[in-house]
Length: 148
Image 1 (cartoon, rainbow, N blue to C red):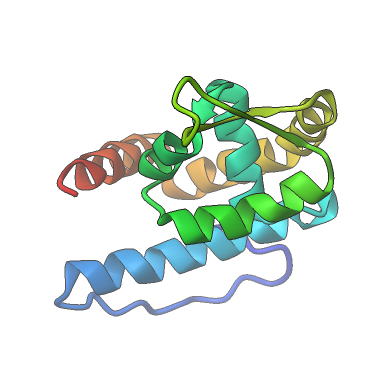
Image 2 (cartoon, rainbow, N blue to C red):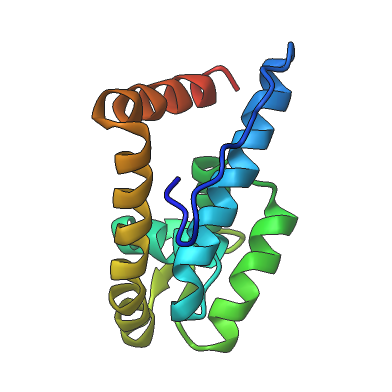
């Protein structure tokens, strides 16, 4: 990823465990996106929820947890600030136990406001990795999610 100040060489050891390598890479990429989103006041986890709800309005909370591969407790905790800021609308589904989520008008505005920060993070990471590696990374990440 591009550094904003002087460039330094970072040595990263290839670990024998795929999970350890993926988790390390995930932390580095998450920190990068969080730094790029910082001026918006959002964390990547919050932006991801806004993005998912923008793409899939009316999705059930259960389906959103499945889509993002996060447990319901973590999802509820991450949704709480969005609810507090009135960016989230929830209503009972056909089955009263089902909760359908969508963005309010304020939530849609917040998503649009934060989008350019996320877009710069995307472009920065793609540029740092190169187009071919970027596309392979996305493909491998999707494929790895399929095994779960």
